[in-house]
Image (cartoon, rainbow, N blue to C red; front, side, top):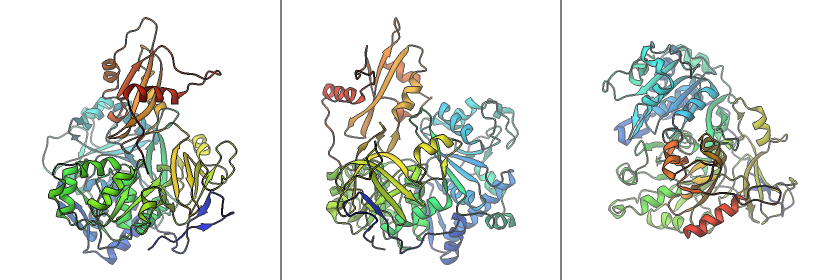
Length: 576
């Protein structure tokens, strides 16, 4: 489907627009839609996991998802219960995504970079009764971290955990290669869990018939300015429709094979990847569990992929790989670059050197399922490299003066707001924060500064909030500050983002030590290690005696940023 021009809903010069409505919204649940697709093209290849050397047709994926849904019900889970997934990309992840949706369980995405403090918070915030986790990955020992939080596992019967620090958690399953690895007390192997289910279990259809598209089905944690992650709660309708219209912008068909190196715990992999494919009968292709540019290039060639997703840093790593010229990428056509601002020159190289002539740019946030604006395959190249496209179908957008709330004129900057089916159900267990983000008229206030041109194309030009985007990861400095305040020697701390050629932005912490206390950079990093995700550990640490402030005592973070740029000889990257 060619993206139609947006419909004006106010004076032509106002920065407000509504997406087209000629293609109706989907009213299915994810499970019902997937079953219809499996019925339509059961033998078509649905999933390829290159690193696991596993392939599934739509019918085979349906059978395994049903078997897993049955197994989850057998553990005592009931519709509305939460189950966490703490894993990189693999077959088990997408099976859990489909299976939970079929029987009304709420899938809770947990970032594999999370460490003990973050895991404890996430599991308890939403009351996860079950957790599926990787056993380990590179230097990360997931079962070891879990045992730190729940030493009671060693004496527990699988499925009957009673842990003081994780009071809701009952069942832990770890993703195994069937039959390999030592037994882990108190846990189930994923293969063992799956084998306990019955793909013909009558309860699946019975529960499915009671589910509504408006039911919450997914929680994704997004860092908060309060210092703690917030659980953005999304419904079937939120993410199924967003996946569908994203795929429409890419002109996906069953002939497409989409390489997905972006993580599934983000909306990027789960919605822009998995659900964009499933809603168009396309083939999902995972090149590896974690990102590796060489396996992406190899998989695109081997699987004749027609699409490729990535954040700018991923595309840069692929383009600059010393073996890049060895691979035949001529099957590529489309894909999405998103997650952080796209350097214009990188976009041009992706189009010319990777054959991605129909690559699109997408913009959004977890709280909006996530995409609000996207370019299409036939958007003029100059617009694709300089904007984030136009409003998605069935959504409304406006750019307002942050102080007055009035819609600004075209070309003027203001806060980007969006409204429609994509706006989240709310933040889990936090009505106050939900009301702060979504106003009484249903508009989601993103905190991003944007402009809109006369044709309705949107450009993101900054952030009202001080969020840092490091290699596609959204980081709120307040969360890092709150954590560093726990150090006994820290009197005060301010964290900012500063330009970085590789990641777009890197974290910098300015720290004031308590009188008489001694602090070193190594001590700060050691304090962070194993407690917060590696990407949240400040790369640059400076010890100071004061912060730049206004006459009224407000800290001027932009002056900290400017001082670091001057000190390190940094310049802002020119971005689309």
